Amino acid sequence: MTRIAILAGGGRLPRRLAEACRDQGHDVHVVGFDGHTDSATLEGFPHLWVALGQAAPVLDWMRSCAVTDVVFFGPLRRPSLTELRPDWRAAAFFAKAGLRAFGDDGLMRAIARTLETEEGFKVRGAHEFWGAALLGAGPLGTLRPDADAAVDIERGTAVLRQIGPADVGQAVVVQQGLVLGVEAIEGTDALLERCGPLRRPGPGGVLVKLPKPQQDRRLDLPTIGPVTVEKAAAAGLRGIAAAAGATIAADRARLIEAADRHGLFVVGIDAG
Image 1 (cartoon, rainbow, N blue to C red):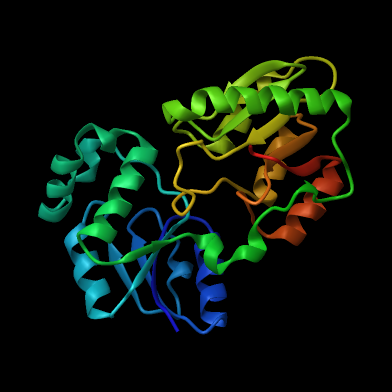
Image 2 (cartoon, rainbow, N blue to C red):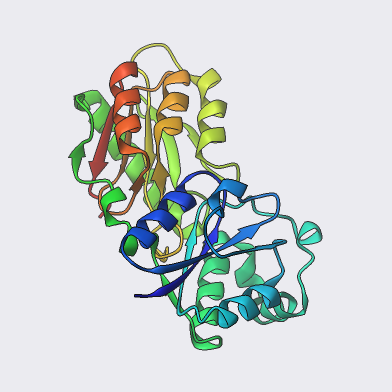
């Protein structure tokens, strides 16, 4: 049995992860963040509510619960520095991290490094406890990308490999070789909403999601789910391509049903 603390972001997935860990016999604790984490995520588990930026209570509570392993899971809206209001422990971390804290990947890697080297916890990836949720290679539903879609997937992959090292985003929408939009701080759902009005005549585009090449995959794997499919369909896309073995496919049955219903393909691709 492992004593795990899940630092939970928004949505339903952190709850699913907590249940999967509990089903495996692990002792699960959950940290929720005010204004970010769904209250249902914490129900039935030992838990702590804190404001984002309050590090000392989290560290003290995890030690009091004899937690050994820490998992980050679920989206958190990135606050501005004026919104964050860090406590003394978080302020000391930011002072030491310096400019690395201004990019999402740099920030998460710095947090993980501090937890492991200075605080004595082991940082784990959600997929280590919930491997069944990972997207496999090939089509997930009944549809497959055609030759034209394959060209858009290749184009999207090339774009993400160029912008990934700049710590910009994990997703891009490509239609007929044209980049309609690149994910930034707004997230994938908002990217799809933004790209809908930009759709051109002819076959719909493709959403491509890949982890950034420098990304610590314990901390922030790309995720797709039924909502991704619904928004992709609303934007006029014809498919989704994501990194096989490095993407969480949430609510798989509902994801496949939505994809087949809308006539979209969902495919796991080699992330390289």
